[in-house]
Length: 90
Figure 1 (cartoon, rainbow, N blue to C red):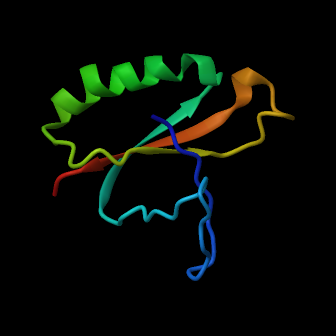
Figure 2 (cartoon, rainbow, N blue to C red):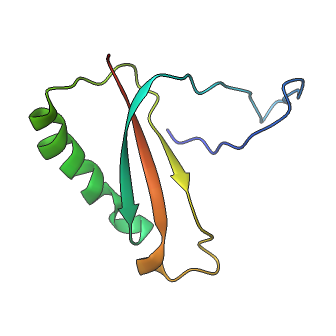
């Protein structure tokens, strides 16, 4: 499942198609990805197969999320920048 998120006022109310969720603070590994969205799964694969096992760290929960840093409507695919956040146990 995928969710799109954006900041809202604390008193914003959702309707039947919108829910309000909180991204909790804590320690996150941040994977800085540059390139087309279609190839982001390769970056995730590297994170899980290479970085995470070598880091000695463990994921906590399942609330990873992506932050899209530029506009895909005006940015060439090879120039798209995305930060992918993975929550880590302390």
